Image (cartoon, rainbow, N blue to C red; front, top):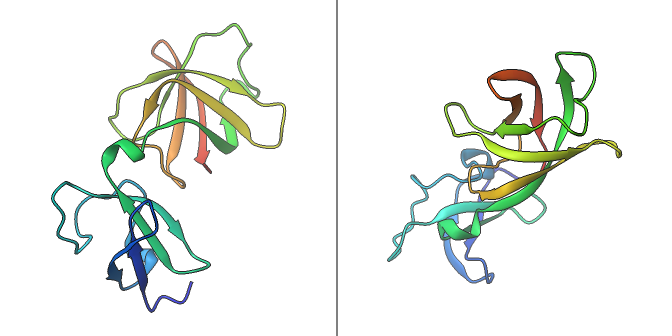
Amino acid sequence: MSGHGGPIVDPDGRAIGWHHGLANFTIGQRKGLGIAAPQPLYVLHKDPASDTLVVGPREYLGRSSFSVSPISWIAGGPPHSSTPLSVCVRYRSREVSCTIDSTSGATEVRLAESLAEVAPGQAAVFYTGEVCLGGGTILL
């Protein structure tokens, strides 16, 4: 990433603007894009290799799964597979039911419903009822 800026493109790869550094943007960001459009646009993806910022409508943000690593479990290890889990991916956001698979290096999280708020670098915090089980960093 050069930090000198690069193209802003829509999901189809059409150039619709120019940015002055990918570090100025986060996945899911809506304000401050510097683009006039008939509908609100959100940051969907940042490609450091080409300094490209991909933006699009909110419905393109939804994710039904993501990876988390490392996870710190309060009990020292992941919960039993039959434990009902939910995850919160942003401060004060709603919890969503989920399942996890920790058989690979990173823990894979599958959501019961798609969430637009999932972004790399954010925390994913796991609960069963009102009990916090642990959390980790979202990789995507």
